[in-house]
Amino acid sequence: MDKVKPSRRRGWLLWALPLALIVLIASLIIVGANREKPAPPPKVRRLANVEVMTVRLRPYDDGLTLPARIEALRSGEVSPRFGGIIEKWFVSEGATVKKGAPVAALDSAAARAGLDELNARLDSADARVAAARGGVDAAQASLEKAKRDAAAIELDINSAKSARDLAMAELHRIENLFNEGVIDQSSLDKASDGARRAELAVKSVEDGRERATIGARAAEAVLEQAKANLTLAEAQVKEIGASIEAAKINIDNHTLYAPVAGKVEEHLFEAGEFVPAGKVVARIFDLSKVHAIVDVPDRYIAFLGKEAGGTNLAEAKGLGAEPLSRVSITIPGLPKLTGGAGEGITLDAKIVRIALSADKGSHTFPVEIEADNPSNSLKDGIVGRADIAFLHYPDAVVIPVSSVQVTDKGARVFVIEERAGENIALSRPVEPISVSEDELHVGKGLAEGDLIVVSGWKGVVSGEEVNIVVKDGELMGSGL
Image (cartoon, rainbow, N blue to C red; front, side):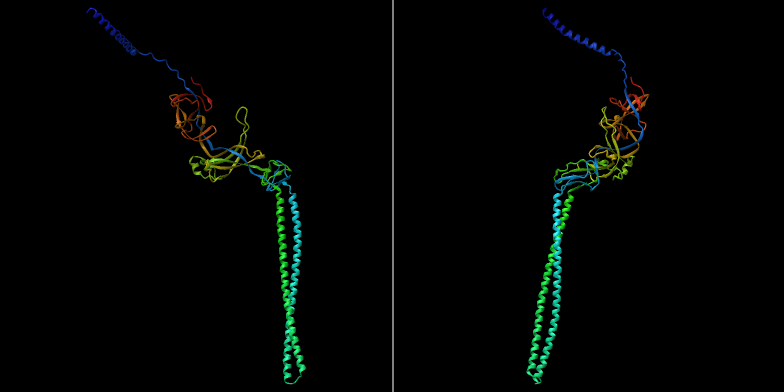
């Protein structure tokens, strides 16, 4: 029994010591929690430095800036219809020509030789026509003579018949007298012989009439043949004449004419070189004016002015704007070593044509603009830009693009409100209408007199106080 008791005391001590340690730690935690905490050190306030500007209403022109490829007012290509060797140039490179003026000529020696041969054939054909006309005249004369002879024979026939009738009447009278015994047989025989001779005379004259009729018919056939020969000869003359006209046109086609007025760019072939049919030998550009084709999005096409075909005047008034049509073409200047580019060239222009249908792929309308080209300074193919102003706003809210924050809820700007002497930045939604370079035209959300943050707004939270260091371009001070 004495040995067991010390063992129990040691077990109880093993449990009591951890329990006491736990109670001590818990007591320390409770005491620490109830002890008063020291006050934190005061925070140093650092305000965001911002630049602000006062919103002012001002006139603003809304428009488009689009790439434009400059083209000559008119251009044309000089090319032969058939192949040949260039004989000579009538104009030098860079020379100004009028429409229809000769530019170059192909060698036409063979064509001219062919024309000379045709002229010789024409002379022979003319001689054949003259001979055929003579044959017609001779045949006509023969026919007329045959007709006159036939008419004369008809008179002879009538005379012979009258003589025969008289002879027959005399024969009947003599026969009656002979039967009455008044006259003898010899008188009867004589009367009978006269009647036979009269009958033979009629037959002879009638045979002559048949021969005259045959002669007249032969003369008519000769005349028809002569007329056919004349027709054939005249047809040959016409045929050769047509060939001569074709040869002259062919020779004229050896001369290449300017299809448009303008300047000859260069000789693409030299004299003595062979040019295939249809190959361009020179190009001519009329640079007195220049054209440019720009592709205008369909939503803007109705605002391009009455003279250009636009009609959406009511919508323009609904936006508080006035229709405007001001167009210019700008060719950028040369790049500067310090960055950017020179001023370039800007020309006033006008819209001369708006397509009646949009491109099915891009849904843009090709719009053609035209500008004067002083001293022909602009060349075909230069790339520039076209500025088309189509709406004028007399009183517009225009702010720098740098002042706008693009969020998932749309465009917003920070507007400064003064509260208890502090400048508080408040985020406000705005409705953009258009952008022009570094300016944004705002429709709703801002009013004249509003003070907006234009720079330094990154990191600013709506409702924070900010420190204005620049206001309307003037230095105001700096933040802590």
